[in-house]
Every structure is written in structure tokens, then in C-alpha cells.
Image 1: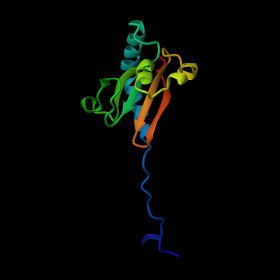
Image 2: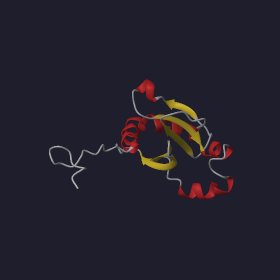
Image 3: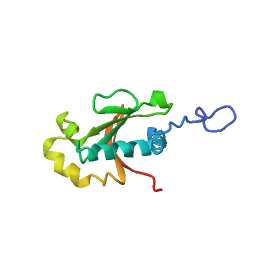
Length: 131
């Protein structure tokens, strides 16, 4: 059955869709210093000991925008939030708080990022670059 081959006998070209996480990683590297500053500020000011950053490409109604993809000509917008706000908004259930904190990585070394994509959302921990 040759129906799938194109005229030169090769397999048809498959459009390979790049994972959004590739552009996210690039943006997180670019944003790392700014995110770390905000993270430290959140902790030093006593707002929270568990800063959470939301990475999205659309619009979310949680946190405060700190890095706008349109202004910075990047792919992802970053908003700053906290564990407390995530509990208040029902994203993390109160009875899951201890479990979350047990898995929460040291905020001096890692940014906690809640990645929102059309398919859903998930937490990732991304290390700050070592200098």
C-alpha cells in the first residue's frame, strides 16, 4: 500500500509539535534572577515561606503578575503567589498542605512553578542557576 508515501517515495513529513515545556525552560532561565528576588522578598516580608510562581500563556486569576510575556517578548507570563493563596482558592486542599510542604523544595535553590496549559496544570521545581 503506497497511499501514504509522497511522490518521491519518502515517508510524509510529520509536523513535530514542540513541547511547550521547551519554551518554558528557556523562559525560566531568562526569568530566574527576577523570580528569585521576588521569592526572597515574599519570605523576608513574612508573606509566606512557600512562594509559588504560576507560568501561563493565557490568563489566570491567581497571584500577581510579575513578568509579562507580551512586554518581555517571551512565551510565558509569570505570576507570584503563595501556598496560602492556593489553599484559599481551593487549588490545594487544606488537608493536603502538609503533603505539599513535605515535597516543597528549598525555595533558596528551586522555584516552585505551577504550570498552566490548556490540557491541565502541574507543579514543577526548577533550579536557580548556580553562579
